[in-house]
Image 1 (cartoon, rainbow, N blue to C red):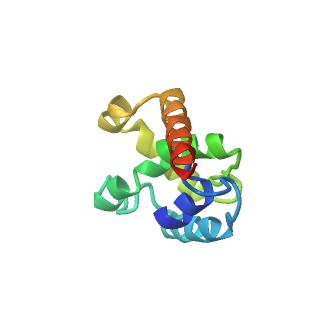
Image 2 (image 1 turned 90 degrees about the vertical axis):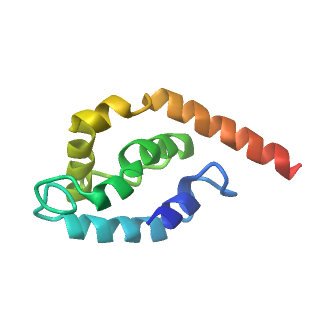
Length: 118
């Protein structure tokens, strides 16, 4: 999932916001797995939730940077609900960087990437 999302909307891809179909297919797998569950492991947060924990914050910031919405609540209701629940866990909520700071960081990464290509 990470590779597909990264290829679609990362600041290091040639055209952020393009080639999103593989990312949508990967997110669909996660959405299907979460159907009827609060977290990947059931009612409590587990290892897979922590591994996928970049999705609610980093992916949202990369979506804003790329001008592309991947985690559509209509298309992926279970994954979207999981993302909201995950961010409500106190230790997760209290340790997250603010969204605007992540977007700024991604824009800085993009500038550095483009400068290296010159």
